[in-house]
Length: 269
Length: 290
Image 1 (cartoon, helix red, strand yellow):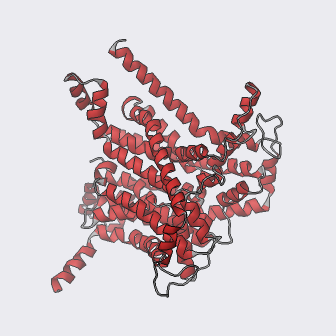
Image 2 (spheres, helix red, strand yellow):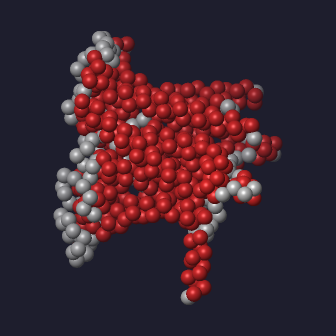
């Protein structure tokens, strides 16, 4: 075998392997969607009778509405607060040079590596010691401990490629601090801010380990799914699962568009 | 003293410090505070709910003499198995994304990142449906070959499958960055000087992509070490992982000091690993690629 045909073979093998692993990643999602259209009370494969009745039931159910509303409220507030905190945090992470920055970079990323279940329990202790009753409000706080560092990381990638000379030029031309922020800094960093926001929303929307210990009497969608998986399976589990997956898919599509805009902008400059 | 106060003041005036302040304060209140409290509770007498008592090492003794080393052992074994499997599964893909796929790499990045944004519970539940008796795998086998493969679910391999599945992106993405930091010219130079493909890989590619490999391995190791959902949803009660023990100590047993000790031990273990890693790695170079 020549050297060239050898490298073509290994190239093809790598492509084949990648396709297999990508398929592997989507197996469970396909399984959940299949189960949501199966009529049987308990899932059996191959599916013989199909139905959309579980979707009708899910959309009519008041308790499902409550769950979705709680999850949405948590995710929305987490997104707003995380973007605000992480925007400043990312500037400190990647834009400015200051004494103590290396230490800050390391410490601020620690919560990402932290076991979430343990973090959730520690927060439960913390809230009870401070005399705060847990509810979906405390869940917002709990999610942010994990999500703010991630959003800082995502925004930093954009901030690293930001040229501070643009801001200085605007100051030299007589712009005020607010004008520079509004006309220069924010528009340039907008793609990073939007993708950070979408990540924040989705990570909060799908979070389970932190919600489990911090929502108190309230319940988010992932918590409900878990409780039904462990005991009392109903076909509503795959159905609600499919519904949350498809809403996530729509947001991811938006994220992809933002990402394409970044790419085309980068290739222009 | 006066000059000290002044330099502190001027340090605070830096824009970097001002911008770092909100997130830092937030994490001090929401992250450092709770952890310190867990640390404090680990020295309180068992089954008490107040921090205002004489500190004791009783919980540490009881944890060491109890059978908790079994769940620590299982967590370590499962995490190590996950890292090793993930390295071999993702290395070819990472190599392809860094060197072969060209503009397709972007699409593959998106396809691999998307599952991260879908609740872990739902994805693990999907695997339950696949591995279940009469589930997708078993059902297909019965329909096509006529024999059954029930009993796949609630086993140690099914937990490893879940861990490998959930943490795949955390290994893959650092590897891609690590491998793309290896210049092609260096590999060509090595093979021009007569190195075989294996030698090029071992002597040039592997050492130079080490930062990425280290970050990926340690990230997946720590995440698997503290994981809860995989062993609960896919493992049933086959194996108790350490996060499981921590949860039951805090919830069912209502023994906060014991749960705190176990948390402190887990945190110390993961913290040590992260600390050793971060000391050797320059984040500016990896994230900003300067």
